Length: 202
Image (tube, rainbow, N blue to C red):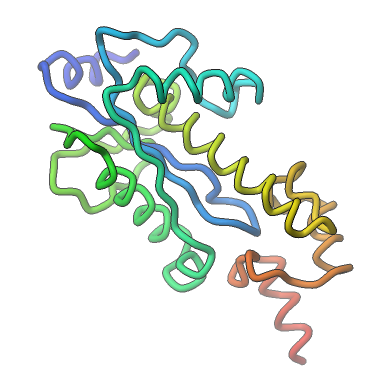
C-alpha cells in the first residue's frame, strides 16, 4: 500500500472505501459499494475484484459482509444511466452507497479520478482497488452483487446469455440484440445500440 494512503488510514478515523461495477456494459444497472473495514478483524486476500476468480470473489463477499464494521450496496438504474450519462449515474450510485452505510465515515476513498457529492472529506485514488483494502472490498461487493443481478436477468430473458457476458458488448451479446431485439434493461444511449436504434428509425 502506498504511503500517501497510509497517512489517511493511520489517523484513527473511520475510512470508507468505494468502488463500482458495470460502467461499460450495454445492459443492466451500475452498482456501487461502500465498505468500512474493521481494523481488529483483518481480511486476507482482498484485491481488485477483476483479478480474482469468481469463486474467490464469492467467498470474500460473504467474509466482507460478516466482518466489516459497515457495508452498503446501491445502484443507478438503466433509466438513470440513459438520462444522466454513465459517469453521473456512477457517481449517484456511489453517493447512495455511502449514504446507505449504518456508520458515517470520517473520510471516503473512491476508486478512480472523480468524486461523488458527499458531506464528508473524500479522495479519488487512481487504481485504488489495488492500493487500498477498503476499496478492494467495495469492488468485490459491487462486482458480485451486479453479477447476481445479471444471472437473474438470464432467468427472466433466457434468449440472452447474461449469466455469461454479464451485459458487456461481446459479439455474442450484440448478435443476441440483433436477433431478439432490445430489452428494457438495455442502455439505449450506448453504442452499438444507439446506432442500431437510429438505423431502425431511418
